[in-house]
Amino acid sequence: MTFLSTDPPGNGQAVRGVPDATVARLPVYLRALGALADAGTTTCSSGELAAAAGVNSAKLRKDLSYLGSYGTRGVGYDVELLRYHIARELGQTQSWDVVIVGAGHLGSALSTYQGFGSRGINVTAVVDTDPQRIGTELAGVRVEPFTALGRVVGEHDISIAVVATPGEAAQEAADALVAAGVTSILNFAPAVLQVPEHVQVRKVDLSIELQILAYHEQRKGVADDGHTDEEVAG
Image 1 (cartoon, rainbow, N blue to C red):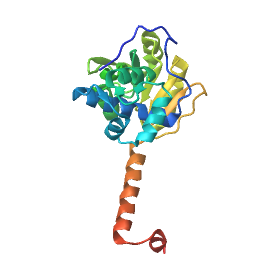
Image 2 (cartoon, rainbow, N blue to C red):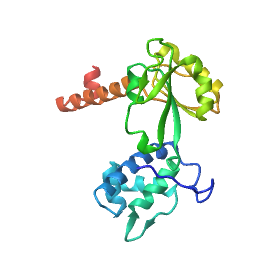
Image 3 (tube, rainbow, N blue to C red):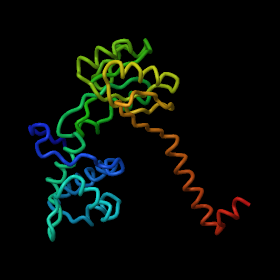
Image 4 (cartoon, helix red, strand yellow):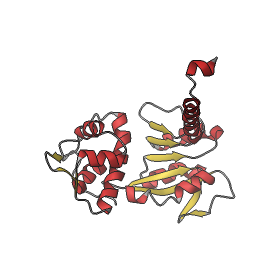
């Protein structure tokens, strides 16, 4: 569900300065509220919402306090109202056009992902350097040449981009995006991007996430064996 609002900028907007850790949990709360709404739930307690989101109640209440006072003592939260306010805080009360740089396996998968639309994200453009990919279509979007990046960003007033290139091509892609006026980049490439301070970059490295899970699995094995860290090290 996408929430669209005609509120003018600054009219009832949530408090600024929300910590990054809280921002990272807001989409989780929004998803949990969506599940509650789909189940016919109209109001929920902080405990119920926390359980649905997989966090503790104290953390959830602290996170929501940054957005304002939307709960009622003894009643809890109005599910739809809280969904709206979290969606507004996440910028989902408007639509965002996004360009994907890289039409390979990952870029193709991202461009055809159906979950973006319901969250106000529209993959409007895809660019690539491979002549065999240029001119093809991904979910109805024609793959443009990389050299057309500045034009497509300008035509669609795009401020958010996804870098889904090989690592060696990522910095060139980032430079071109910055030059075109993009100010937010989601980077899937295995590279650290150097960008100006006004450009926000978030990195998604699936291999690192899997390594972290492998670490925890290893620790479970150590615990099951009954050995301490010192015993394993020795």
